[in-house]
Amino acid sequence: MSKNARIVLDANILIRATFGKKAFGLLGKYEDNVEFYTPDYCVQEALVKIPEIAAKRHENPDLAELFLVLIIKSVILVVDRSFYEEFEERARERISSCDPDDWPIIATAMLLNAPIWTEDRDFFGCGIATWTSDKIEIYLRDA
Image 1: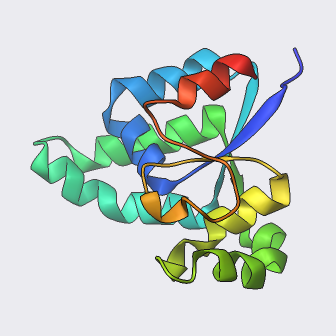
Image 2: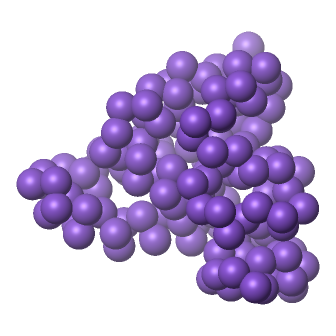
């Protein structure tokens, strides 16, 4: 089956998929119809945050990291910086008033001509369609 749509996942969605049921379930439910991407930057950001989150939840951080790696290997395509860096300047312009470190997400979305799935309001108004978890299934379902 060919995939009809694509979407770029922010690090907070990777973390939600690691620790929560909804995001993980949506990735599995729609993996046949939607291509899920994330920049390498988001993988590293998620891996840095997982130990702290796991500790707060009284969960094993090593198992959480392993689970994220398994999710990525089975459902998510990681985009290397060498592919999206040509969009860096334009992406930084779009997020300059917010968190400038998040430019790789915008650059990847520009590269792929895809929307962003995030819980970070900093992306709103960047000129790229942005979906939050409470509405993402509308996009995924209609793909």
